[in-house]
Length: 241
Image (cartoon, rainbow, N blue to C red; front, top):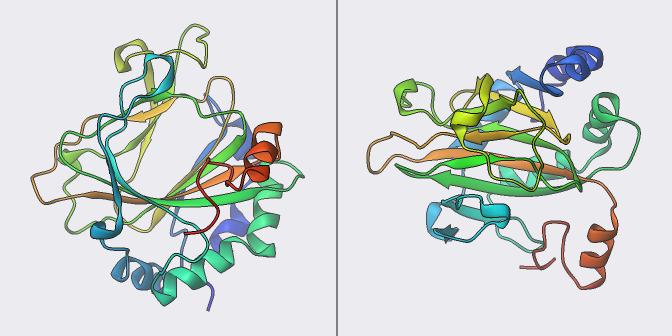
């Protein structure tokens, strides 16, 4: 079966995507087929299998991005639906979709699941240049996630040029759009020198987690090549579990 809702993705306008302000992005409702979404949501990896990232130092003075994280490596044990979905994301259809929106080149996908608890945030940042784009899939149940808890990925803009190697506060930026984290939808955004994004501190109660699946679309830079030579993927993780 197909997990990606190809009718929806085929209707997404590349021109509209590229002309979005303050940088190319699109919130895509019903990114997955209804059956595919439910199969994936019901078989999400258990948090016990994740690494807990808390207080980990980031570059350029940026605040830590606290969360549970599971990064995909070859050999990682996953439920059947997730194996099928990752195969689809590595396939020809998704590459053609990406080339249509992002430009005609090869994209190297890496995959990770991020679960975040009360108080976690993602400080404003621009991604590394090797990341051509990021595709975030939302997996919180829209009937169980209160919008007042937050968890939206914020598309941010600045009235003045900012170095990507800096650490602006949320107060220094304006929110252009907010998306997620509940329901069958996704956010695709392209990396630019001003593609600032982040997430305000979560206000969910104890025991609740923001749950997303992130696909990073890497391009073949020297950094990516050098990591491969050393047995690592584009994100710097060992290639095999």
